[in-house]
Length: 352
Image (cartoon, rainbow, N blue to C red; front, top):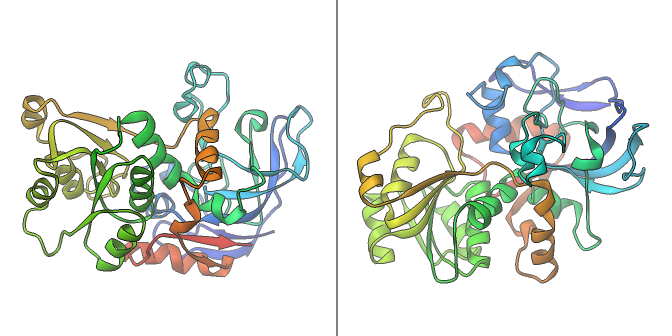
C-alpha cells in the first residue's frame, strides 16, 4: 500500500509502497478515506518532546485524525464488522485499566497514540491497524461525513473536552483563545456553541478573520499589541473567565494565564516544542493570589463522542467549517512542512 513515511526528524516525508497491516486478534484494519494533518504530527516529525516520537525508525507512518471503512477484522473482535464506517480516538486505549473503567480512556495506562508512537503506524497511508477494536472503534452516524469526521479529529475533540469537561464554560463567559491554528479555531467554535464570548489571539490576520467567522466577538493581533493580557483584560472588563493556550510556546502559555480574571481557569492544550523542552516558567504567585486553576486536556474519552455527535445533529457544531482544504497523499509532506512557519490556516485534510 502507499503511505507518506518518516525518513528522519525534520527530513521530508516520502511517498512509498509499504507492507499491508494485518489485524491482531482484538484489532481491525481500516481503509483510510480521510485524515487530518495535525500539528501534533509536526511535533512528532520534528522530534519534539511529545509522545514517543524520538523512537521513530525510518518507514514509520504518522497521521492520527482518520475516518474510513473497516476492511479486516481480528478473530476475537465481537462488535465491529467489515464495511463499518468508523473513526478512532488518537489515544487508543485498552478499555480495561482503571482510567478506562472510570470513563477516562484518554488517560489509559496502556494507551497507544495512533501514529505518534513507534509501535503504531498511523493513517497517512491507505490502511491502518486499530488494536482493542471493540473499545476504540467509533461508528460514524449517518449524518456525519468522512471529511467532517477528519475535522473532528484530535484538535476538535481535545478542544471540546478541554472546554466542556475540564473547564467550566457557561453561557456569557469570556473565553480567550491564544493561537488560532486548527486546535485554537476548534476552541473558538466550541466556546461559541456553548454561548461564551470569545476573544481570539494570533499573529496572523487571516487566522483571526477565520476565528471571527467561527464566532469570535473580538480579535487581538499579538504582533500589533504590546501587551496581550492587558488588551484582553480591556476587552473583557477585567479578564477572561477561561483562557486557552492552543499553541504551547512559553509566551502563549504565560499570556493565557495573565489574561485571566480572579478565579479564572487556564486550559493547556498546546504541546511545547524543543525550545521549551516540555517545561514553561509560570507566574506562580499570581496564580495563587488570584486563585487561578491550571488544567490540561488531551484528546477525549471514547465514551463521550456522542455528545459531539448530538450537537452536530442539531446544528450546534460544524467541524467541517474548520476544514480549510483537502489534499492528496502526495501533498502531505509539503503541508506538514508548511506548519514550520505556521503557514496553514484551519485544518488541512488528506483525502484518499
